[in-house]
Amino acid sequence: MSSSAKIQIPVRKTQRVMVLHGGVSAERSVSLNSGAAVAVAARAAGYSVDLYDFDGDLSRLIERIKAQKTEVVFNALHGKFGEDGVIQGVLDLMEIPYSHSGKLASTLAMDKPVARTVFAAAGLPIATGMTVARDKFVADFKRGIEPLPRPYIIKPPAEGSSFGVILVREGDNQLPIDSIDWNYGKELLVESYIPGRELTVAVMGEGEMAQAIGAIEIIPSSRSSDLKNHSFFDYAAKYSQGGARHILPPPIVPQAYELALEIAVKAHRALGCRGVTRADLRYDDGSESGRSVEPGRLVLLEVNSQPGMTNVSLVPEIALAAGIDFPSLITWMVETAKCN
Image 1 (cartoon, rainbow, N blue to C red):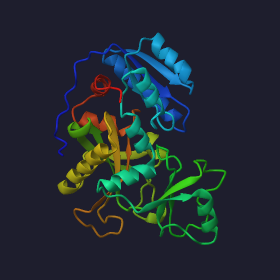
Image 2 (image 1 turned 120 degrees about the vertical axis):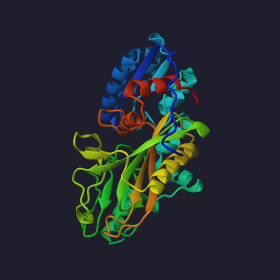
Image 3 (image 1 turned 135 degrees about the vertical axis):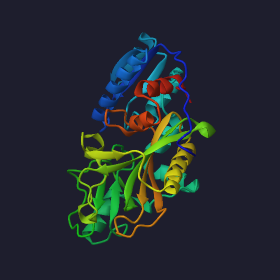
Image 4 (image 1 turned 60 degrees about the vertical axis):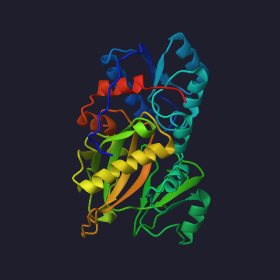
């Protein structure tokens, strides 16, 4: 799947768009920024925009949609209650078209352990990992028992924006989670740390029409080749100005680049996604060990079914490099919106 494939921007037919943002998840601030940016772009594209800060009250949301005679909902919510199938289900019942993936695909993508199962069944490369009860992890850790050899990553099973992600490194003796600073549920997703470089790929479309439009390499500003001081693409790197450098296209061998695009499209299709998604991958080319190996190894981390649309977000940057400016991207997403 080549990034040279062209996306056709539909003629604008919709008039009234609700941009749904805010929400009640840990990603509320990201969603507010995404929604504000989308609203500006949607107005620039000619839409009448109702920017709605969702506070979790579904009945109020339903009444607002009816009162505004909303034709399409641009779902700029992130995290729980926004991209886990809940809002999608409500809009399906109302028969109101919405952006991004449908209810089932959203639910699958949000649940990282389930998504891993889908990816494995599709033959996609994933890290060694498992789900562990939080209490068991804590008890075992205190006895010197750990689920995987170090280094490994701890993730919440159903959060985005790298919330709660912890890298457990060689030499770390402190319990990586406790009841004070890790409040993401009773289970942990534990995965082997994949050394190398951080890549992300944007995919647009549905089914056989889905295509990758490009990729970026992300280099956190404090990155070090020394794993003990390694800084990965965490929340601060994602959403802070200067938190990371973006290199587009990634300076990797063509074979690896094309394979990254192919993996992203296959993952998008395996989950049944539509609209726009962002696949995050690790590319181990041997650079961290000092022994460069080409074409290297690619590992799929996750698919974000509702990627950020802030002024530092990756998908708009990839789209712009592919010749799709932000208002055009939003137009495409509005005009291809649908119910399940």
